[in-house]
Length: 224
Image (cartoon, rainbow, N blue to C red):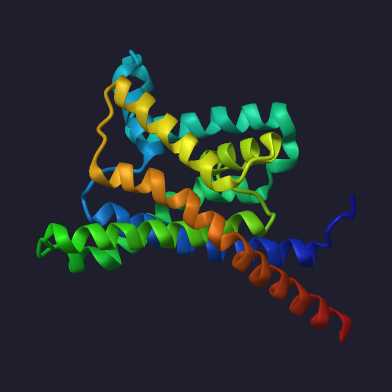
């Protein structure tokens, strides 16, 4: 396998960060509609509520999220470490701060209490934006967040389309989380059935965008 130059790696990381910002803009819009959590966070919520965490651990939803992500990461390292890259760590470290920033910027737009007929389309739009950003992250080939990697790895190993696999993974997260005491809302259901198929549609577009950026980078390097 050809080793990437530091410059190419930097371009791929920049693409990943752009995709991460787009994806978490979608997540923020989703969360601001207040119609429920995404399936992975329903699972995290259920696990946080169900486990008899020792008091000294000081567990919170955020720490449980990080713990689950680390467990997934360790499993992936054991199964096929080629899926894990610097972007995997960046996704884990930067997701929360990016959402916090977008929440600060977007929260005033939602404070007036939008009617359900507006919030549902906004939630769907958030899911589509999330799906687009996620495909850029994946196509950057710099690494992907642990929760998204579950569907990516299963899709590759089973040689099945990403859309249906992602739906199955999201439904599993949501149902297990619900059984453990997590809360499933309308947004959870919409997210479970929309993100995977939308991502499958965006993959060819994201592939072309990432390849165009890399080709442009190669052209600039050839002139230096």
